[in-house]
Length: 162
Image (cartoon, rainbow, N blue to C red; front, side):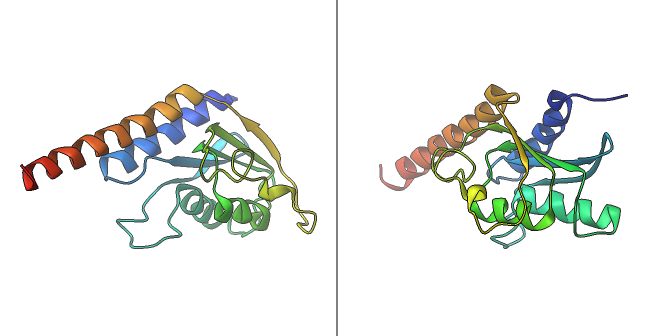
């Protein structure tokens, strides 16, 4: 059964919910190959004490292990939020065929929002890009996370400074 971009983005959103529950910025990712998920990941920078433990990084690492190759030719990465500069570099080096992301990231998005890193002339790999898949759900998860975090910080500040 061939699944749609929305089906795979829902799987990425499930990964984002795991990050949310762990207190991490709720970004999730899955890598697909031949209509099946071969890698999953969610942000774990805090829990792993690793600044590179982004959802994309973890999903791509898992996918490479699953197929036994660091080159992910024929694979698609689905991620809930537009990738950062580091993760765009990873897409180039892993030879991902296609990136599908949900919502833009205005401050650090390196595909369209803050910069277009993948368009550097010296890169020797290009990939297809599709965006806006379940964008409201993806941005809503982020908005909810940061809204709740601000409320917690405000409540804590109120307790400490009555």
